[in-house]
Image (cartoon, rainbow, N blue to C red):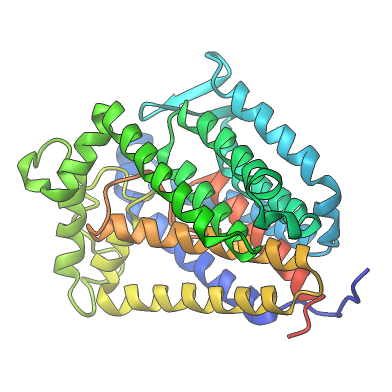
Length: 366
C-alpha cells in the first residue's frame, strides 16, 4: 500500500473552490431573469446550485479520505451499476425526457443523469484493467478490443437516449487512457478511421444533428431556428469586449440566449466580464490541469497514474468542447462547463472526481 502524506494538494483545492465560487456567482447572474419570470424567485437556480455544491463538496472531502485503491477494488461493481442505470433510464416512466433526450432519472424533486456517472465509472474500470494488463494492450485481441468494446457498449446505450455530447467525452477520455497505457498507434489509426465513419453515420442518421452541423457552418442560414443559439452566444461574447459590460449587466440573458445558466454560461461570463474575465477562467482551468498532470506523473503505481490521467482528460475534453461550442468553433452539443454550468449531476461528479485526485496527491511523489 502506498505511503500517505498528511495533506492533499492544497493548490488544486484552491483552484477548484475558486472555479466553484465563480460558477455560483455566474449561475445566479445568468439565471436570475429567467428564474424570476418562471418561478417568481430570481435565486431559484442559484439556490439549487448551492445545494448541489454543498453535496459535491461533502462528497469531495469524503472521497479525498478514501484510499484511491478502493476504486480499484470496486471498479467492476460501480461499472455494472452504471450500466444498469443506463438501461433503466431508457424505460418510459423511469427515465425523464428533457430537450428530446431521455437522460434523467427522477429522485424526489431532483434528477440524476446516469451517463455523467458512467464517465467516472469507465475511467476507474479502465485504470484497473489496463494497470493489470498493460502488456496485453499492445495486442488487439487481448488488450485493445476488450477495452474499446466495453467503451462503445456504454456509448451505444448513451446514444439511445440520445446524448452525443456526453458520449463523446466518455469515448475521448477512454481513448486518452488507452493511449497512455501503451496501445499501438497503428491500431488507433485503423480504429480512428472506423470511428470517423461511424460518427458521420450518427450525424447523418439524425436530422437534428445535421441541422447542428449546417448551423455551425453557417448559423445565419437559419437565424431563428438551428442557428439561433449560436448567433445569440456570439452576440453575447462580442459586446463584452476587453473588460465586459459589468457583472449582472448581460443583455442576452433577457430571453435571447435560451437557458444561459447551463451549457452557454461562458457566453454570459464573457459578456459581463469580457476577454479578461474569460481568459482568467481559462487560466484557472489550465492551472487545474497542470496540477492534475503533476499528480498523475507522481502517482506511486500505474493504477493511480491512469486514474488521474482519465480524470484530467475528462475535464480537459469537456472544457474544450464547451468553450469551442460557445465561441462558434464547434457544432452545438449538450456539454456543461465543469464547475460553472448549472446542473447537479455534472457538478457533483466533477467535485467527486477532484476528491479522487486529491487522494492520489496524498500518495504522489511530486
